[in-house]
Image (cartoon, rainbow, N blue to C red; front, side, top):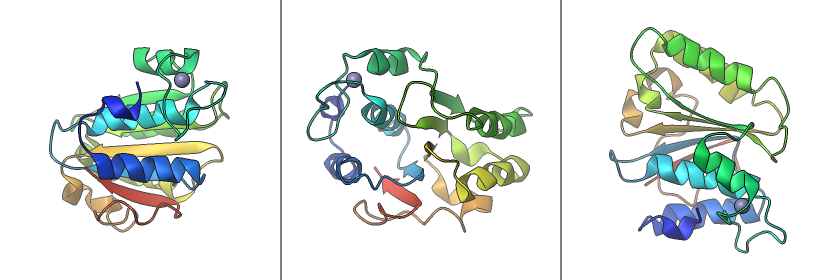
Length: 180
Ligand SMILES: [Zn+2]
């Protein structure tokens, strides 16, 4: 679904579309903001926009919402896009390993391999450290999106992901923080 279907959040939407247009989207993004305001939804729309197969592509860059790729991402069946939810339980390190393993291979049909990790602040130190390696040395053609309503709790990664700030800065860096 296109960015337009997300109610509000004009600044982050404009920031992401400008980054896509200039091909300066960071390799690792942190989406932060209050709970249930559409962070995960926005991350998914971004994944669709990145891998949209519409020809000609939407202008400004967007998800067409109608192509095979957009449908697959909506349905959770796109081979290059993985959406995970971190838990504070035992499986957390598995999440980090899962993310690493997802990036071993190049994209199959999309432009980028994308992993979205919701509730990223629930990862504890060991898992977060495993994830950090992926964030620090992003594999080619990869995009990792951390989603968190408590970015201050991302302790082990605070040195790595820039602190929350207004969208519109940092798009040209490897890592960017998107406030919603
Ligand atoms: Zn599309």
